[in-house]
Image (tube, rainbow, N blue to C red):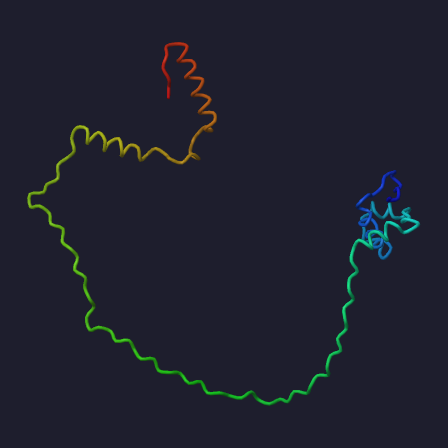
Length: 170
């Protein structure tokens, strides 16, 4: 069971944290925050040491670092490093052809009597509509109103049209 603190409660499973902070406080009071300094000034850890022994028993002991005796350094003689000549092989040049190979492109045969005629009728109307559609922005970020508001407005208009004369906007 954990001891009661001066505020009337216990630290429960966080007792180890309080004990660790208390050890830091004992080593250097400025290493913890001011409210913990005030708390630790009247804090008495468990008198029987149960909480700290439980916390210490729960954590495995950290093995001490084994000290390895270093062998005395051997004296290094200042001898120049051996110099080895670098031999580069002469690469054989890749032969280039005297003339570059030219690909023949197929010639598109155009009829002699080919002439340009303006579009008329339905074809002309389709082209006009397609060119006009290029000015309509496609990005949704260009809208002047949010999409939700646009949907709500359409619903209101459709309900009004249904009551008045029938039909829908979209």
